[in-house]
Length: 442
Image (cartoon, rainbow, N blue to C red; front, side, top):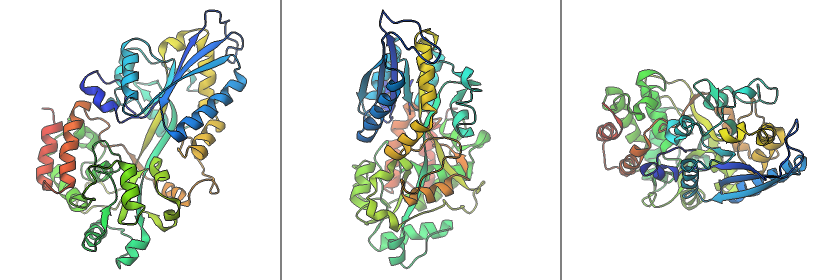
């Protein structure tokens, strides 16, 4: 999720994100709070989130459940669609009208939440870190991602890993086996194209999710995700792309994706591309987050097999890696946390976010994974492909979304170039030079 962008150019980036926000305000007649939340006196909580059919329904159910133990609490719900919600929150921050608590994207520079923290708008929640309801409840990566400069600013509520899926029935028709090596993967895309299939049944529209994932995997392998040559630092402008490693990564990425998406893939969003090409079995490969699984038609799922992204000859680091991270966290405003009436309610809400009830509702009713430690999925309630894909993701080293550390203002020109690269307009070396021009800061 992305917040905290400066108004102007930064607003454009906000249009990609999804958020849930909870705000609190008390009526003038509110009584002081008790030990586990204000039990007397009416308390009105502003709550907002990025609207979606499944998310709206589950969030409403969760609010009603919370109200059973907090009958004095009333929720005022504020929702907005994805293109408008980030602007709304940004303006709330700028106007010092921060919701008392809200769900948003993780606190990384690309999302602008670091600016919210610098402005003092978000509460430091570090005092709960050793509480039983929080400690050891979440995976280590979730807690570390929610922590900035040693302080806990967010409660992990949702995460995703990237699923790399192949339609095995089509692979069999092509007379090939499921790819385990880099050469086999590239050959699959070439043969599929020659035989009239679309290798990658995904969107290449700016701000789509799936098409960025091959970029991240390839560049992470060549530039590694650590140290001063890391891919994240490269997209953050700290290391050059026109290095031998950067050029090699771009050339391998060219072999894998250039000219291998649908001709109209730049006009379709992720859901439309999945519906038009992958669900109709005109496309062989699918790559996107677990949040995209509901867009795949159920009858197709038994034909799909999760793949490991293979080692690449000549790459610096070919250890098993997986793009996985928080996709949703909950924040509390610093003003709400300092308010003697609101704080106990916010503490109870945080406990609720850490509960099994909350996790089960997200996982089984909304099909959104939660970053709970050792999350086990009930095979009677989720698709087998998700369990199989999770078995690949869990033990792999985490790598982050490649644009996590990118300057938001540089993303728009990047997407234009990247779209042209997928269409085959640039060679690998030319693409590396374009990345250098966009991101590198001397």
